Length: 121
Image (tube, rainbow, N blue to C red; front, side, top):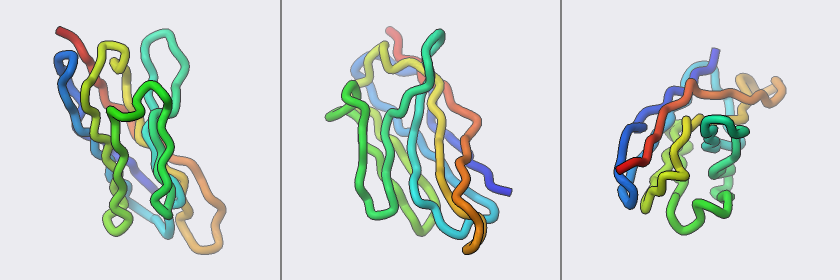
């Protein structure tokens, strides 16, 4: 079994910062991609940022220059540093990983349980 456990959400004022963390544990052979998604009320889940094994990153346009995704492959963790937060960033944030449990297995996708981020005065 594989688990993704997020932490770090909460309430912050506009312009503030938060750091989200996600740790993957269980039967993990290799992780190819880790990412953060978010889903605001009444909206579809969207990719916020992703980081591949080689370190290449991808961000949705609305967070470029404000959010930074970092990965520690030795610990199977990924963090999302969020600065200059705006009310539009309010959402449930989900950790996502694509990984193999064994050398000969296929890649599977896993999700965390989600953590609430609320940006409000």
